[in-house]
Length: 277
DNA sequence: CATATGTCCTGAGAGC
DNA sequence: TGCTCTCAGGACATAT
Image 1 (tube, rainbow, N blue to C red):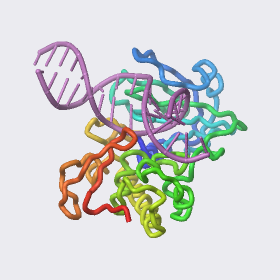
Image 2 (image 1 turned 90 degrees about the vertical axis):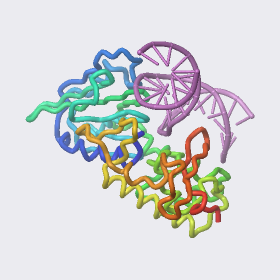
Image 3 (image 1 turned 45 degrees about the vertical axis):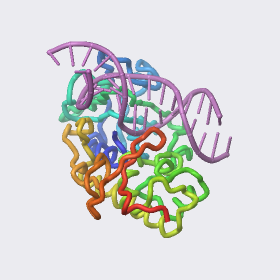
């Protein structure tokens, strides 16, 4: 479940692609339903071959290859998508392959077990979600004042609101629980009841947990799905404070961590350490 | 308008 | 052992 830290780790791992030119675009035979590619593969191939990568960018959970023409290739890994320069975990779920000329020759593989990921090419002057305020400020950068201004009047539970990419970009189910724990804030707290001091603590907690997770190259859960660009595991899962720890003792007070469901997603928190006000 | 729910997808793991 | 069932949660479509 690549969130901001996992996608940032992928982005950094793709640094060798900067300045490289796409020589081929392949969509391997796959026994599964094809992933969503826009435009369709033939047109995508025509428009990509010969293009040179100028920069590797990330907007929230979206990886973006900026091309010298001004076009952008946006990759959304969603649940199980991986972007690799190395061999994939298995050959069966390779969904798209970009080949690059030069020495050494490089291959960018988009591998996706569940197939919920998407790949989309934006023309140079076409509006993109990240330049078009369809995506909130990056969770690593957002100030507490901005966070409070965007959510302060919402009646939603804070945990649910943090997952809204229009509010802020990059936070998913795992890091929402972790950040709320660090901020000692109850995930069920309605946004409108949160105080200035708590918004400040929450923004600081988001920055801290995301930076920390990037340092450990993201979280590889028990299903082993997430890997970096070289098909290696992250290690932040060893530092989780609440996620997937229902029944285990809180690292601060030893109270058992609880699991609840909010908006059809699991939330983990310490009922002793985390409060509404 | 804001918020809530349903849908897509595959594989792991539980239970029998 | 092998079957069926449930669950995981990204983003978006549709409903309230």
